[in-house]
Every structure is written in C-alpha cells, then in structure tokens.
Length: 130
Image (cartoon, rainbow, N blue to C red):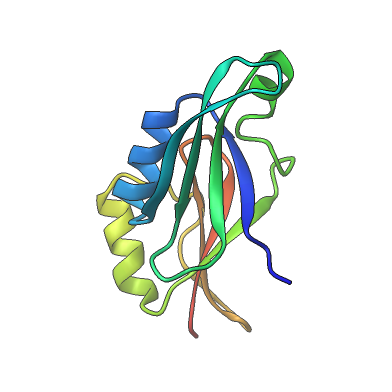
C-alpha cells in the first residue's frame, strides 16, 4: 500500500505548474485533458519532487465552495512537508525564486525548519537535517 496522490486546489493550472516546477523544482509528471464528473473539460495535472513516489494533483477550483478552500485546505495549519537534504541551499534557492517564507529558519529536535506558502497560500514546512 502507498499514498499515490494528494490534491491541492488552485486558481489556475499554468500558474500552479509554474510555481511547483519553477520555484520548487518539482517535475511535471502529467498534464492531460480530462472531464469533470458532469462532462465539462478540465486537466489532470500531477507534479512531484524529483525521485518521489507521491505526487500532487493540482486541481483547478470548480465552483464557489472549492474557490473558498484555496489556501486554507488545512485551516491555516502547516499541512504539507517538504524534506530536503541541504536545508540552507534549498532555503536560499526558494527565497531567490520568490517563495514567501512566513517564519525564519529555526532548529527543532527533528531538524531545521522554516514555513513557506505555496502559490495557493497553503502552509508548508521546509524540513532539513539538524
């Protein structure tokens, strides 16, 4: 058993792809035309960190309820965790790419951590070794 995908609701497919592949350095795994359950066109867009098995389905909001969830899918808590081998280099690269950090890097018993926002406004932990 494995976790294959999680979903992040976004405003725009192309802007989200740009953020995840450009700023974060994820791979674009799939971008295929698809249909909603009632037959309207949409896209099936999957990104994931290089070498990772679990991907993120970037789902464009469809309707007011989904639009309202953009950026608050985890009610303002950190809900996504990106572990890296070289914390300082990754933090610098993301900062230079325009990623917004809401906390400065700090040391915790489990390693180095800093909180950043994705393109939708969701909170992520950037995690590295102590």
